[in-house]
Each structure stands twice: as structure tokens, then as C-alpha cells.
Amino acid sequence: MPSVTHDDAPLLADLMPWSVAPPRLGRGWPTGPDAASLKARWDALLKAEAPDREALFEPTRSRTLHTAVGRLPGQSSGTEKLIRAAGPCPDPVRVLHAPFDEQWLIPDHRLIDAARPELWRVADEQQIFVVETPSETTAPRVLATSCLSLLRPGRIRPLYRRPGGTEPNLAPGLLDHLGARLGHSPTAPDFLAWTLSAVRPDLTVPLTEDAELWSRGVELGRRTLWLMRRDGERPKLPGGRRPYVRAPLPSRPLTIGYDRDEETLLLDEGRISPVPPEAWDFEAAGVRVLEQWFTARTARAEPGTLAAIRPTAWPQTWTSELLELITVLALLAELRSQQEELTATAPVTASELHKAGVLPAPETARKPASVLDHHEEGPEGQFALI
Image (cartoon, rainbow, N blue to C red):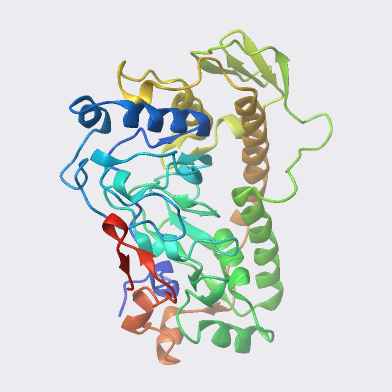
């Protein structure tokens, strides 16, 4: 029997049994907030001659210029050893680099110590990755993203085990059991929305057979999911509360601060307001989100490294992303207070799920599904069928 809380709420790990450790890059330069810089870093690497190319690459035990690995599923990078590599940079893809911070990654298996190909195989427009985040505060314990997540050390739980939004990564029989209790059939996205509203710091998920309470939690969770994924229509605060640039941002801001009385974000002499205190104070994984986001774009890199290749001035796109991030954090803070009011009456307990045979999930549900119906290119252009 799994360990449970005093009220016997089931663990997220039991309800969504398949999980994968986050990718481990082994080097920082293949990621960054600016895709053009990543392409410039790739070009600099390939133009360098050995041993300079090796020093720029930053080899580890898992990856050197001589490592032979297959192509990442769904990507178009080369598979020859990097010591002989030529050609353009693979198109960078969006990744969740830190909580609420989407950046770019060069999707090349040769650059990544542990890429977790099983995640790449199920990544598509329908997929949603549930990401555990360590926290001792009221910060979100799980995030939901359309991007592959690089957050460590928490586990990643894809909502679907196969591409195309098929075979939910849920304990077999869970949705049927909840449907019998609620009087209607919930979907996998419904379950995810409820989880985003109800999950606790210990990663238990109180469930309920109260249909009205369930609907309210799902509605709040759907809005949370929309804000976390940030796809589709852009979120907006009500008129008069929308943040704007009040004083131009410098070409290379070095400091960030906050004037609580004026509700103003300070980037050197640049000014953005209004910025609600709830947005400035918003934390995830134990750090203030806005400060971490800014630092990722302004921290100095060691001269002569590939990571030092970056924009020479603050891009306008970063300002747009910052304004949207402020909006997202402010709206999430409003939702948090409503979610904290949810109390799971009429609980569906872990003991009940065990008695019904829903838990424990079979061992096969904790392993990746066999999703390959095509060849994947292996090292040096060979083909592999896994």
C-alpha cells in the first residue's frame, strides 16, 4: 500500500503512474532565451578546430566530440560524430528552462548527456507535461507545460502515453471509477485541471464525488492550465491594471528591483507598471519567478565560452515576454486564493481506489508505451527500430 496523508488522499505518483526524470544537459550553452544566439553558438563550435572545438563543447563522461548517438525522435539533427560535424544548426525548440520561463534548446542528441528519448517520442501538440517542482512554500507544486521541461529534480508525468493525445497516463479504471461517483464521465484533461486546483504540497490529490465541487475545481484548473501553457489567446489584466513600459528599458539592464508603494518594476532606470505585489512576490521552486527570469537573461557568462555568445542589447521580444509573464503571475495569484478555498468533501479515498482495483496501477502502466511505428536514425546514419 502506498503512503497516504491523514485523510487517505491518493498520491499523484499513483494516479499518474508513468513518470520520467527530466533531461540532463551536461552543459549550459545549448539552451538560452534567444534562438539566434544558439545558432551562432553552433556555428562557432563547428568553425573551431580541435582542440579548441573540444574546449568549447565542454565534454563530460556522457558526451564528447567522439560520442556516437542516434537522432532525437521527431528532430532532424545529424548523427555523425561532432568531431566531423558540418551543416546548419538544428532548429531550436521551446523548453521550460525554469518555472514560467520558456527558453530555447538545440535539439541535438549529441549535445545532451541524458535526453530522455521517451519524452521526445510523445511530445506533440496534444501533449501536456506535468512537472513536479520542489517547494516548501505556497508556490505551485506542479506545473503544466506544452514544452519539454528541463526542471530538476522533480519528475515529469506526460498526460498521454502515446502521441496524438491517446492513452491517458492515468491508473487504468480511474476515470471510469470517478465517472460512476460523479454521475458523468470526466476526461483526462478534466482530471489534470482538477489536479492543478487540488494538489497538495505532499503531492497528494484529494478526489471527490461531489459533482458541483468537482466542476468548480475543474473550471479553476482549466484557467490555470491555460495560463501555464500560454498558448492561444494572450492573457490580459483588466483595463487600468495592465503593465506597460513607463520609462524605456536600457540597452543592457543589470539590476532588477521593485517599488511596492508605486507597484513598479525597476530595471536600472527602466520602469514597468503597474506590477501587482502578488506578481513580484510569486515564487516557484523556492525562488522569486521574476528575479530568476531576469537573471537568466543578464547573468554574465565566462568570456570565450559559447554561452558568452548572446544578444549585445536587450531584445524587444524580451520586453514583450516580461509583460506577459507579469500578467500570468498576477492572474495565477488570483486563482490561487480561490483554489485554496476548495475543500474535498465526499472524498474518493486511496483505500476506496485500492478496494475497487484501480490502485495499485499495474507495473506496465509505470513504463513507457511502445509507440514506434517507424525507423529512427541511429549513430552515423544507421537506422534503429526500438
